[in-house]
View 1: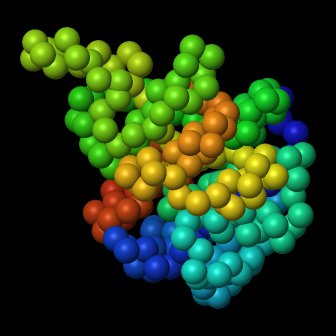
View 2 (view 1 turned 90 degrees about the vertical axis):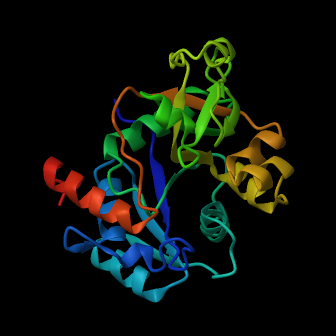
Length: 257
């Protein structure tokens, strides 16, 4: 069953510090942002909107059949870009807004449907997001892979670049870490439109600043972030030149070109 109507907004910033011009980097012969738009269009979203400060990115969005919204280059984060679109559109908490990062070209469209349904199924939640099981100690210890922990009902307790939960006894004894509760956070969010705007209006939280994780601002405000766990392989996105080569190989192998 498809979720109630939702909107996908893809923030795409050209000024990435680690990979400048990232949205237009060619992956399998097409701009990265074009692949992300295709994944969004595979979902049941009623609208797909690209938010960027660069007209070249917006032109590609229009060519791919998405909507395009110019957003100020001074905006600090993808959340801020999406919130700017939400204010312009006048979205309230009745609107489910999904943040699909502009560097995630292998996120399956049906996963966006599941995320929207998760928010729909938890009317008290302000946000929803997803995690996947971690398979190896190397992944758990990789600071570029964000980890999360939840309460028994799936409500987020914390997100970190550090290895959480910390298996104290295994570490003390030199054994393999128990990964049963280890989850990698997927950088996907479903927001209620009004909450998204309230979140973006708040100052950066102390933990957010330390970990460089925007979702910690919501937790600092006491927000309810509902987490769904999906047992599927969703490769990390594009952050480095090496990631470009890795994704081209993956996309060729899966036919997503």
